[in-house]
Length: 145
Image (tube, rainbow, N blue to C red; front, top):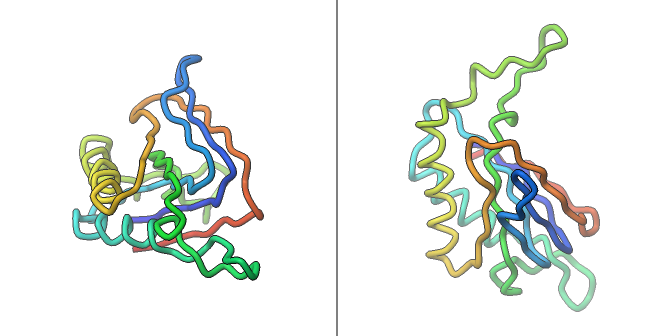
């Protein structure tokens, strides 16, 4: 399971001209699923995203988490995180899980974040999404679980 997380001032996801998810300050988590990922990994990823200390404390040190600050999370499925670019010029996506396997695990990440106390917005699975964000910092990290 992979995720790219971004500390944001605001973010939204639009599908067919309609905003389907929007947050203020918080985290955008682009989540990719591979074939052997599990619900336990989804729970671990959610905990990592929610509790990772990437927000500034009063001294300007990244020592606070989204949980500490009560911030929002926008979760967007992103199969392209498993794009293999080692050969040729066209990425291969054979490591990305099929949608029917991946969707329940992305939902498990969302459910666990909510169980941890996060306010979570999402994109819409199996659609063309336009993700807009204002990166804060910028702070962008890659997570592998």
